Length: 451
Ligand SMILES: [Mg+2]
Image (cartoon, rainbow, N blue to C red; front, side, top):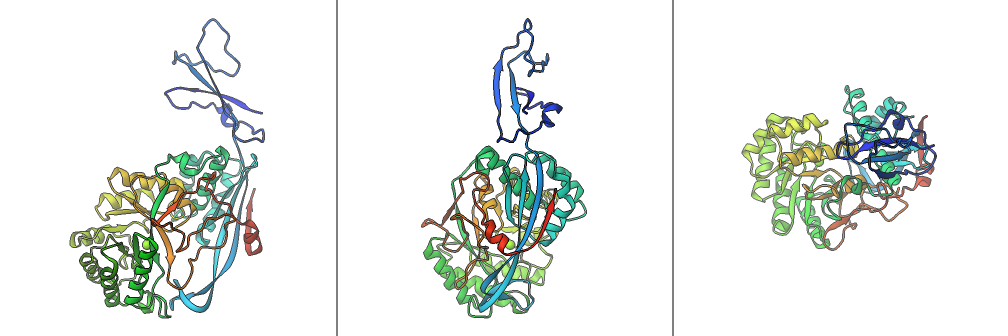
């Protein structure tokens, strides 16, 4: 049955306890609003709660509140061809004839409305956190995202809170499907397309991105495809060589620097602040657009990155590894970065990523989203202060690591841009993608159900 509440124009919703506890009637969201003029001589309608503070038009809302009935996480595995690990095992790189097994997770939030929120992504540590808070969500209203975010943030205060991401994204997907609107429309649409930069695989020694010239050749290829930007992920582990990184910055800069915006992301591989400075000065010479996570502090030292900024003219992009909204804000306030990083999966879902974007906006800075994906596109569509979509990881001889999980035409491959170098935003409800759950089921390696 539907329940009733009274909302007062201009003062925000004053939803009654009764409405909050409303029982679903098993249909999609229905809201009936009517305006009446207060009439003291007439008995109020049973659905109307009089509030004498407002001698104005009252708005009546008949609400059906949905309820989460079950949360399901499915671990699955898939093979990546022509890829293999770096010697230290921490990165996937091009390896002809190689094969690499990757594990991912599918999250489904079921409700009594027959509408399910879905997201595929995440990692094992995040799923371990979901294991701690999923039961809390069962029985709750999936639309109360902000309240759930706050409660789970407190509950997960001992940890990095990366488990919030996949669940929050699934709740946003639910909201979009429930309201029959793409997420960007619920957030407030700013754009329909966004330029992408080609973000490379890490360097290899196997005939792919195995030399400064190989990076320059691939940058030229990406320029021909229409990419307006190119980001270098250089070599890591035992293949690390600071001088070779500097050579690569110059090789790419001299080949395409007049025609593309260039970025460098050593992903914290450089071992010293001195190396970070040396490589940064090469970026200065080649007029790079940004320099990201250079060295071994792990990308989290406010002091060192403020010092680095004082020595370089190339803008710094930090905070990919700064977890939490308050530490991020402190990092910006300490003048330790020029660009701000956000990732819906890392940063508490779409709720958390949008908070980071608005913090950046408040400081007059731009937020650059990490990694590709449907959640990233939905966020970017609703943000003014951003420049690029990260098409990662791409290389000249192997496809992206994106799993074959879409039952629609969505993808994130090197060729997924238009002639202008942009990607579009999905306009279907929720995330705007359809997942191939048959594929996920066929490749299932584990499952947890919370109900
Ligand atoms: Mg990075």
